[in-house]
Every structure is written in C-alpha cells, then in structure tokens.
Length: 501
Image (cartoon, rainbow, N blue to C red; front, side, top):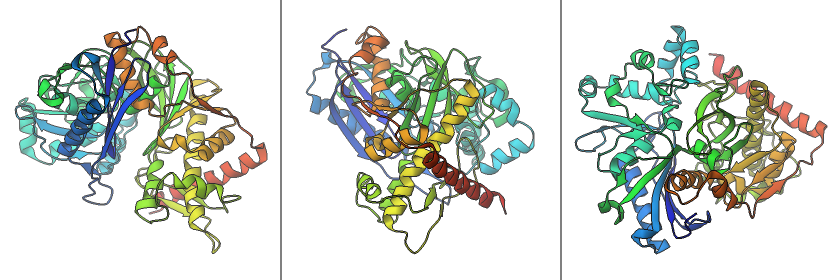
C-alpha cells in the first residue's frame, strides 16, 4: 500500500455534486459540494441541466484538490460514482447536450411502460435484465428522447450522438470525448443490458428502438476509463473506478461477499444484498442487479428502492417550512412520546419495491386536531425505517438468507434516533461506519485497488474500521408489530387510491 497516494472521488448525486479527496488510510482529506437546480417542467417530470451537472462537478473537484494542497504526483486516480438511471443525450463531436437529462425520479414514460406490459413483454424483460418495466429505468427514457424528435433518431442511427448515464457524461467531458464508457452497475439499470450475458441485449434494443451506436462501452468497475485531460483539473489523472451510487456504497461498506447487506439513506433509500456470483431472481418485487466483487469485477445483488426517503424531510423543510434544517428532524422526533397515530407514505413519484405502483402519490393518514408539525416530521423519518423493513423482509424471502446485521450510510444515517428505530423495527443490529459517505469511498476504493493505492479489498476495508457505531434492537415484539401493521395499512391505502380511478 502506497501511503503517499490519494484518490479523487467524484460523487455526482441527485441534488448536488461533491468531490472528496481520500488518502491511503481511507480518510477524507478535503470535501467540496455544490447544489444545482431541480427542473420540474410538468407534474411527474424531473429534469437536470447537464451543463449544470458538469460545471458543479468540475468546480467541486478543483476546489477539493486545492483544499487538499496536493501535487500532481500525489493523485493516483479518479473514482466516479453517480445517480443511476438519470439519462442524457449529447453530440459526440461537440460534447454539447441535446436536451436536459431525464432524472431517475421522472415518470413521463409511465404510459409507455403500461403499453409494454399490456403487450406481454414484462416477463421476458425481467428475465433478461432483472428489472421491472417501470419509468424509473433508463431504457424508456432513451426511447422517449428519440421519439420526441425524428431528427434525433436519424442522427443516433448515424452514430453522431451518444447517450449515457451520468458516469458516461462525466467520463466523456473529462476525457474531451475520447472515451464513451460505463460500467456494469450503471448498464444494468437501463433495461438494455443482459445480466448474465453481461452485454447490451439486441432483443431489448429492438424492443425499445434504441440503436446500439448510441450506447457506451461497458468496462469493469475497477479499471481503465481513460484519462482526465490536464485542462480540467490542472493535472492528468487516470479514471480508474466507476460504479453507480448504490453499488459504490455496497463496495464502500465492505459488502462484496454474498449475504452482506447495506442501506443508503439519501434522497431515496436503497437497500442492496450481495448474492455473489449468482443472479437471484425475485418473486417479491425486488430487482436483480449487478454489483462488484472484491476486485471490482462482476457480482450480483438484490435491490429494493424506496424512491423517497430524505427527500421527504427536504420537502417538509423547503415546501412546507416545518423545519429549518434536516438535522432538526431528530430533535423534533425525540420531543414526542409516540407518533400519535400519524403515518406518512411519501410516494411523491410512485411506490418502488416491493409494491411498484407508479401512479401512487404521497399520503398522510391518521391526522387529528392534535397533530403537530413534529408528528409530520417524525412520520417522515419513520417511513424510512418501515420502508427498509419491507424491502429487507422480501430480500430474505427471495434469497433464503437471514440477515444478521444491516450496514447503513448516507446523510440520514447520522440521525441517531432514526438508526435506533431502524434496529428496533428490523430486530437486528444496525452498523454505521465512522464515515457515512461510503458512496464516494466505494468509488475511491475501486479506483485505488485498480491503481495499487490499496493492495486488496481487505487492505481497503481494514483502514476504515475505527469509529463505527452500532445500534442494538430494544423494542418489544408487540410494539413492533403494532407500528409495522399500521404502516402496512397506510401503504395499502396509497395503493388503493392509485388504482381506484
């Protein structure tokens, strides 16, 4: 292990771009972060300005390097992690985006997905991709972009355009267009990638009308993704690690063996269970997706996505003005003896696993004249714990694995009250690492293993063991059953509201 080397991790998220410089001890030497605007053209539509993503990511990378006070020889590589499924299209020659990026939360292709289901395609798509036909994934977003303008399709077929998830966009910009590539963890979220063949699937490309000439090359998550040219960062640096945010967090948590699970509490909540070399099909509304083994090679996982988690607290803060800052939610929840019978199903963009109801919308139930803003905030936090419990139960049933510990990360994992509730609801311990930004750390780990900063995954994990927190369950079975049964009732109400039209 080379003590003098550092990794620059680019963490491009749904609401902000961050850059973190890690040293060979896995410590964050410097951090820079900038938010960028969310664009809502119509109800259910969510977009990002690709140039805003690039500029904020570039600016944070430059600032993190300045703050770290490193010379060119100190930076071994760049690791990239990104919001998955968010899709954009750009001109290969100029690097200019053709349109705004369509964000993973966007629901504009709901009707397209319904039509594909009605035509009987879902079983075959799920068998090939491990995914369900839902607007969440990139494939129907790409089809929508091409269908929105006949000229775009002609240019796409001629090889003039490139499409990709955000990792591909950043790679293209950093290399000045020299590399158009992605990794399996991002490719497997497109509805176009065959899980076990580990390649773009011609049958799926034909089904959605996506020319293969548009798509990036799929490369191993730890390896060569080209070199960031000197004009961007002041130094030439190899890009050596790429993974979608949730798989990067899985790797950063050391969950590269079958049976290990993590949950990332971010904008959404994303639970992944590593299933090793086996792609386990789900019969309970979960996704089968790719992950990384200890060398950054191909592995598989079961995933359950709760679309709205921390974003619900953000809405209570920004939309309703019920709190000044997200960390205030912990004190507000603690101020109450109980939840007052209030349950919040934050289905602003539909329900993800294990329900998959795209037409569901947010629902508050159990309100009385005694309901306060503290009850609403507490209900938003409780929803994260209940949604996680639903998904983990489905994972255990699908895989036959009984989870003995849940590893957690992401911003909301810093909320001690929520983490204790999570342990109580699951009735297993919850472990939080000292550094909760394991998404960026995972990208750094992949890049560092590829370039020799760490000799192995064990070396990488070994430098970050100190300072972890552990929450042991303390709730009685009767109280747990009461809370989860009422949550189930609230979710059923949200599903029924969506379907009763």
